[in-house]
Image (cartoon, rainbow, N blue to C red; front, side):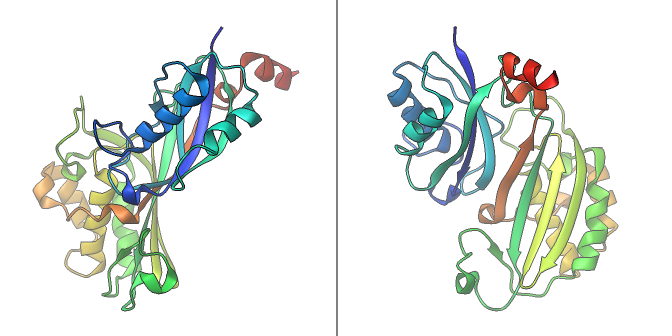
Length: 263
């Protein structure tokens, strides 16, 4: 009988054309799938928790796949990790419940967007691949006030670019917080799901508020308009990183382990 595998990886998205497999292009899914097939010696369909765009990074991307390979998790992880390129790292690999599926089992995700907000370039801190450089000082308090208007279950059509099939543009944002850490601004946004480029469009809108071009309350009007043209620009991909994905704990172990843990 086959196994369901939970795979947690980190990757530097700079040199990838996003997560999703694409013909003749280097993608994260393509690299990992190819490596898994070489180890297990049978076809594999890797299911990701979501698609990151070209240039977007991940510290905690989750995927799942089915296999008949009998390698213990520790040896399995080493066999895969030693064959992957330097810009992908396996953080964890373990057997999961047969019902676990990285996309549909996800309860929420948290993304972080980083802005190097100082006159000096981020290369001074070796963060040029992972932070957007915006040299003009941004007003964090105004951005925090505006960010609160994104929280809740709302229609985010004004924050969604075209290019992704969807039944609805309604999404639920659980939290949206912005803090300054010396020369860096960080936006942490958690939601049950996100539209194509939604987080980067939210960040672009907040930048316009932070630079004083818009009032914090304008977010309400922008969302109500459902018009993408009313929102801010799309912030660059390099500042965005998927931090983690939350799942029901009972799905993260096979049934025997789950039952034993409850005794």
